[in-house]
Every structure is written in structure tokens, then in C-alpha cells.
Length: 288
Image (cartoon, rainbow, N blue to C red; front, side):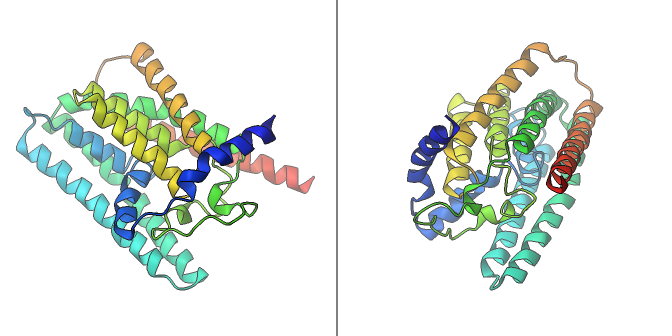
């Protein structure tokens, strides 16, 4: 049954995985393909979310802050990916990738500052940020747990595909090709996070079509850049819809500036605990 499902998934994924696009289009496509997952699950998407809250009544200073932060992430991404593209050997690629991870991880402090500023400068934004953070927690903790249990190999590291998958101008999948993440293909956390983002901006009053476009670009991009299979992004999206629905129905609507920060801290703590615990189980199993 599982083999038949995997074979069907390969057929479903092949058109995107083997598609070819001009270099410029590939670069542009890579932004939504990774924007909802770098850094972690609260970096780029959180800043874009903050931007979605910059409505007509929002202060100019808030709009300027958000615009600058989103531009910062876009520039950092372009610089780091360009360094990986320019790398000539495995050692250089590994060094460029490590530098990129370190830069993005450092930038995780910026969204926390955005939370605090939102409460002071544009309080109405905090309600949306709180919904975003709770939906992220509920959705991503479940996905991280399933990832570590399913251990599905990512397309970029598969050696059984004939002919091999074509190389991309932007090696976006190089971030997940390491042994630490190479078996975390199912389900897609990036596609799930795109759904959380879409649900949040729709709640904030933006058109449904904008949210749908974000989800489609993220999901198809993850397949195109060989980070996921088609069913990975489909299941990730469905899980996220369920998580967002649960948060909307059952989680408190009270707003406090510290709630989103606490939610983010809990997410990272639980995520690390799950990875550490399941990695320990795998190590023991190998020794046995």
C-alpha cells in the first residue's frame, strides 16, 4: 500500500520536480518557496504578517519599520544564496550554508522585537500576531513530531530517481540536504506555515485570493526546488488548516503583548525536545 502511494506521489511530483524555468524566474520563484520557512518558522513570515497588519489606520512609523524588515530578509536571503551558488566545492558549500543558517538564526531576535513594538506602536496588530503564533505552535509541533517519525527522504537526497532530478539555478534544497534534515520530507512545514500566514492575513481583511496565491507559490515551490514531494505539501497544508481552525474556535481571544512571545519560546523549546528525544531513540536503535 505504502509503495503504491509512493509511486503515485512520484508521478504527481514529477511535472514540477523536472520542470525547467529561466534563471531570473527561478530566482523570483525561490522567494515564496522558502520565505515561509526561513528562519525557522517565525522570521520571514512573521515580518510579512506584521506588514499585513499595516492597514490604513496604522502609523507611518509602523509601515516603515515593517517595510525595512521585509527588505532586510529579502536582501540577506539573496546574499546568502548567491554565496552558495558561487561556491566551487563541497567544503565551500558547507561553509556558505553554515554561515547562512547562523545569519538567519541570529535574525530570529528581530521578530521578537517586532512583537514588542507592535504592542506599543500598533496595538491592533497584536491580535493577528497572537493568532499567527498560536496557529504556528499547534501546527508545527505536530508536524515536527510526524517528520521525525515518518523519516521520509527528501527528493534532493534520493538516489533511486531515474533520470536524476535536474539541478536548480538556486540550490534552495541545499539547506535540507544535510543528514540532520534529509529525512524530514513528510509533511511539509513550509507549506503548513504558508497556510497559517494566509489564514492570518485573511482574518486581517486582505483578499482570499492573496492568501491562496501565497499557499500555492509556497507549496509548488517546495516541490520544484526538490525539498518535498507533492503529498508532503498537501498533507502539511491540510494539517495546518485543521490547526488554524482549532485555534480560531478554542483559543482565547484576549490579547497581551507577552502571549505571542511566550508561544514562540514554547514552540522552540518543544521542537528541540522532540528532535532530541527522537534522535536519541534512533541512536539507540542503531546500536541495537
